Length: 433
Image (cartoon, rainbow, N blue to C red; front, top):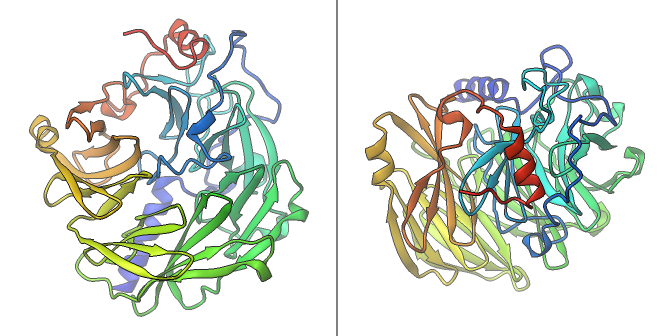
């Protein structure tokens, strides 16, 4: 059982592109300082403003499913990644555009196409889009990169690890967090570190070290709320017991402390029943309170007192949150249930129109929630299939809209309209209908 699980995880990681090595990875970046030929000088989309908290976008609560590895929010829309390419999606209309305005670009040469990033981390901060890369062109060292909002001017910001930190084959442990001028990240030896934006890797501060020699699997997720930074670890030991621990991060390991610890729960059936649902972290922190899913329950913990209360009995696998609601996706019921953070269920949206439209949908993954909007990625034809549909679900009205410009709907890159690219960037993310 354990061996088959490990084999499946290794194959999935190899297929997903979550890791890269000099021998196996295609080049995924252009030399530092290279800019595009796109010469439009119109103002890019404005800064996010209230859409992020010092760079961390907790209101999106991104889940990072297999075919949509990264997403972030900008004024008027979102940046999404599919198969290594970055797209800009207008929030109001759902229209998408490949983030490359180079008229001569065929989007096949990864070192030249502005839309190529192949990253599991995207965030919009201080007027720039940040992402990470770890490929042969970066000497297989985890590197923070940035680009302008129109996809041009890709450049390296800083290397997040020294050659001594590299431990052979790399597994992407988690999405970093850019917050208040600092970058938080996890190295291959499970050291949680931070550095100032633009800093030297020799100045990395170690905030936490996790011993994993007896672990079968482990994952991390960073969070920020108010003036505090957190990291949640989820581990599965050799006996299959799962545990989640929330740490309040200080400026050093001595100042970091565990705030909350889950009960140890034995996974059963095909789903790990724990505070992390499968490989998704179903939690949210707001106002000093931790909201979690565990073993059929919706819970809240007061991070100051340590008290924990069960808000509701729930049925469903994966959840997304906002500062006022929890959105619970149930594959079995083919629905999204909306709960207030007091535990009361507000409404339930049937997803039957999605399955009525396509008879070959095999599985679905929540992507992110923003306001009342819930985004769901559905695979067609096979488990984690390259062919998929992306849906915008208005949980307030119950309206379900398939985003027709989602590139994986037809497995081909959409034709690039360069005038349209200029229009969306110059207009701050506004495309005419």
